[in-house]
Amino acid sequence: MHLRKLFLASSLLIASAVSIAAEPEGQVNVQSSTDIRQETQIWTTYALSPYLRAHDLKVVVSNGTATLTGKVEDDVHKALAKQIALGVDGIKEVNNQIVIEEDYSPPMLSSSRGYGEVIDDATIAAAVKSKLMWSKHADRLTVDVQSKGGKVTLQGTADSKEVLDFAGRLAANSRGVDSVDNQLKVDASKFKQAGSPKNSVIKDSWITTKVKSMFMYSTNVNGSNISVTTKDGIVDLSGKVSSGAEHALAIEFAQNVRGVKSVNAKKLTH
Image (cartoon, rainbow, N blue to C red; front, side, top):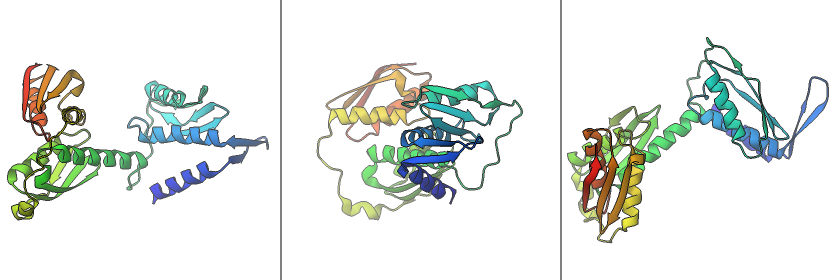
């Protein structure tokens, strides 16, 4: 209900040409649609930030100046709030009135998920589903992915225990995932009429992109340190990783992308 009210309020704000509010002196302050858009953008970014979403911060924008109020527990969070506001196009100045209280405790969260949590869970579920659909096992799996508070639930059917276990392992190694409830069931009969995977050639550029994305969405592989190239379905990995475990995971993730014939990791060191 809270989220629905939020979206309704945002829609009404953006649809309005101006917003008129009475000030203490009895004067009338006219907010332009640009002010409202900037205000909404700053507030939304705070709601999405894992560092600021729990704080009761307020934003008012007028003629390119953003006034911030509320409480945080340290100057790092106060500075972050200012930098986010300055990052919004058209904001020229920030009047940062946020108060620092070292013993400040953010307000108790309601039982319903906030805007930021909803976006986090949707992002996690989309990342896990994408990784599964990019894999060689996509034709052997029908899966629904749900995420709540970092707990991912997999439901559907796999054609073997091997694929079932792979799906759970891939989900567990995804950014933002704290735990996986793998409810997939093995039923090979559902896949017998589907036939073998498509014989169409998958472009090397597609393979390279998906291998890089596999790394980017994974918690235990630092994709920024790994270079990926593909030629005729053969993937070459180079760079430096932190451990043998990361090395093995990088190879496994690359090997399981559709279209990959083999992986050469001789230049991937640790």
